[in-house]
Image 1 (cartoon, rainbow over the protein chains, first blue to last red):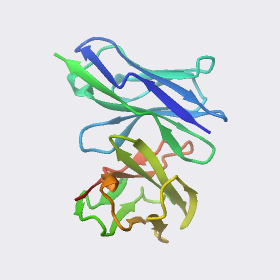
Image 2 (cartoon, each protein chain N blue to C red):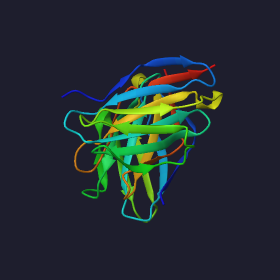
Image 3 (cartoon, rainbow over the protein chains, first blue to last red):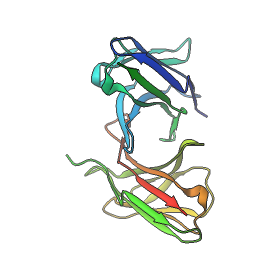
Image 4 (cartoon, one colour):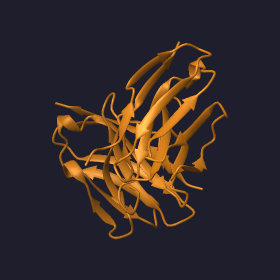
Amino acid sequence: AQSVTQLGSHVSVSEGALVLLRCNYSSSVPPYLFWYVQYPNQGLQLLLKYTSAATLVKGINGFEAEFKKSETSFHLTKPSAHMSDAAEYFCAVRGSNYKLTFGKGTLLTVNP
Amino acid sequence: KAGVTQTPRYLIKTRGQQVTLSCSPISGHRSVSWYQQTPGQGLQFLFEYFSETQRNKGNFPGRFSGRQFSNSRSEMNVSTLELGDSALYLCASPEGAVYGYTFGSGTRLTVV
């Protein structure tokens, strides 16, 4: 079985500051891990994915995430926040049954 | 290429009624997954169809059902609607060999 824990339901940063959104996972098989972003009244947009090719994964809009097996973590970072990054972010793990299991989400607020 | 198309975008139904939602996956993709998103429960897996066969099912009552047609379009049906069925229903289509799912914009169902 798979599970995902996102630490912090709400993260607030200043524009230009580092963004760090935390995700820990549990998986009985080597995981595929994903970060999605959701803007109000929209679906989920894939930011990046880990597929075992490289532990540091670069995604869209300047985001990246590092897979750390020893810590079962897949934290999302961005060096400098923009106002347009304000949204809800979801970490997800895919198991062998093709089902995505999502964390509860982290709402990112960017202050001017 | 076209993305995942969900119709309608918004629905308002009365308790006890039934509703049918539609999803067309990315052209050429044979798999479709459905998810329910609510503020309380977050994103939860409903079911997945592959080549007209249900491959996986989440932990939802039998009032929730689905099907997939030969052209890969999928429908989900909810019978005897309850207030708690109010949610954003998202459809997803796998993207590439490692299933970074592409999501549609969703159908917002409100049960009154």
